Length: 367
Picture (cartoon, rainbow, N blue to C red):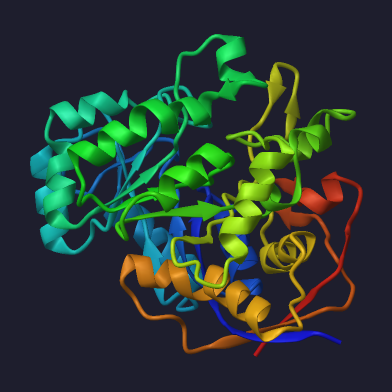
């Protein structure tokens, strides 16, 4: 039986939402060995200011971080809340926030490109108004949802390209050339084009990868439309999945790390469409282990186990500049069962249950 004893890990891209269910979503993170999180700021209202005192119609990093820490009740070593980049974000806001120590990262959303992203503005805005320059000078990380917005259907997703490949071909090289020292996390990448871009840049550029993008392709999504697999960016093609698998399983990988983009929805399918996001709370390490095995890794070997530990537990903290956790948990290759998460607002269906394969190959035990 394969058993991996690992440092507790950091989910460096996750949605813990707001209001009553928030405590349940945070507990789901703690229950799977998370020592900390980077919590997405696309709440309602968004986390668009640093300080509570700022006279802007948004939540503050101060407020949202305090709420997360309250529900975590001391279980998290690190909580990073990125600032949602809006029309009101200024270079002065970045400088003041960074100086205070509260502002560690900012989040770019393509306008109307995903859930609660209507406050986003085009990338060029933040190049023109000095925000990215201030971030570069202050050491603030840019967490970037790398998709082009406002495209036609065929440009958005086609066998010759899609919103992500267009973004990494057209926008990211220009951003990198203009701000070569800016720390960037290319979030939840899904394409070979994004992998190639990240690999071709310096140590100040890294990427997160989700479990679903290591495990599935667009064929799994559209065959019967398995809407629990509907997330943004969409799962892509086999060659893209293969590029992701090769990147995360490489023994010398130091640029790719775990960020689940776990996104809870009590109602996934609606009369006007489908909510974007896969819920992988409680089970993400098990799914990542399955992803490594699907890539051909024997996690019973030293090299594969080390590559897995680097991806899940070590690379993310190293990039964000804090030490790995001293606490540990164990993954064992024995069957376990994924179950819906019950909250005050209703049940949240995890991805494996939604795909009608609730039995997992791995089990997790906290120490």
